[in-house]
Length: 193
Image (cartoon, rainbow, N blue to C red; front, side, top):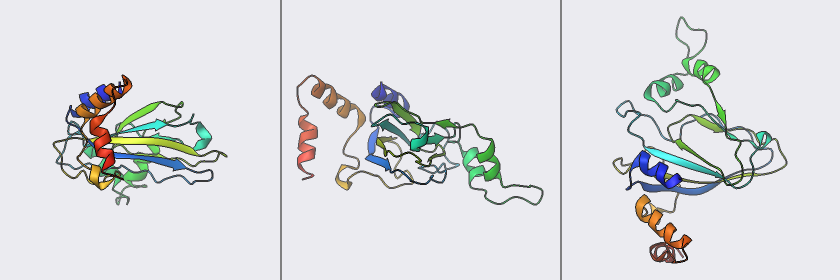
């Protein structure tokens, strides 16, 4: 299902751009709300840059610092408000503060193995981990093949940037699931040692 979703959103030639993990240790503070990639006024909401997939490596409950997402904030209009940090002469608060106080939000309390897919321009943040357990997420992102540098560095080994695209990777993983191995992935992995 995730492969189909990414293919529908970015096309079969989407490029793997991130492949890593996030760990929030007990006592970790809340992140500042942020987008992972900028939303330029030249692009539209149709011109997606990256889609990121967070996969929970354990059940994530409220006190473990789940990610909070602000739906529909991946747009140029929302980013314009978000980056206006000072109130105007006739305003009692900044556009950013007003946006953060009034925007709906969704908490990523995920079951182990669940996947959350989001546009990397979406405003989000990890919340404080007040539990006694670490919160670990495996994540990967695929980039629109028609866009060059998306505005943030890739969190993947430099040798792998632009090396893996969605359709061939899906075929390799399907073959692996059938016990046939992954010759292309194995060859690529051998160059990383």
